Image: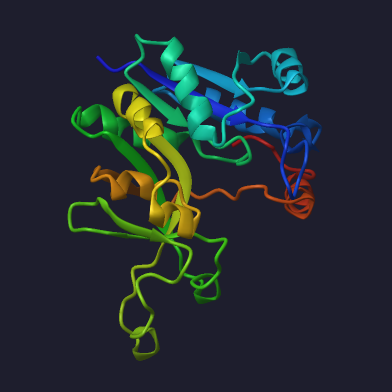
Length: 250
């Protein structure tokens, strides 16, 4: 039987937005919004915040979160996730939930977990949503993904994929925006972080390409659930305006 933990990696340092996890939106730290959404997931046995920063840890414990302190040497959130996984050998799967997506749908996380539970041989899964706005196809901050016929990722890119050559002729163009949600078996997660960064990963600055370059299958759950990440103070201000006078739940 699967035992799935949801982990929210959180770090203080950010080039564009230092201290982002504790930036207050609608009266709560950003990381608290994401944690509250994760807590509503039906298929997660535990939800933890993994951080190397005492300020984040204190704030998270104050609002009731379970916190795991991790090394400050980790280059990515996935490495932070793996450190937690090493301490919890009874867990079968781990889900990396982005702490800067304060409106992530709990239903989306549950869909991803259900897909992994249904296929014990599946090492890794992620999600994507249709991208209808042509203005976003070439936006390098919007990561695109193309799939094979069985729903596994062929490639991720910051460029427009597939090439939009037939769009002007009215042909259907299945453009999918990748969402930064990942599920792993514990075994595969620990193996993944043991591999060095791969060439395409370094070129595209997309960590998930490491899995593909090492021959791993990566299932992509296509869904209409969508959520926007908070990358800059301007993004936070826009979300604050959206939540003003509204229910701030997921």
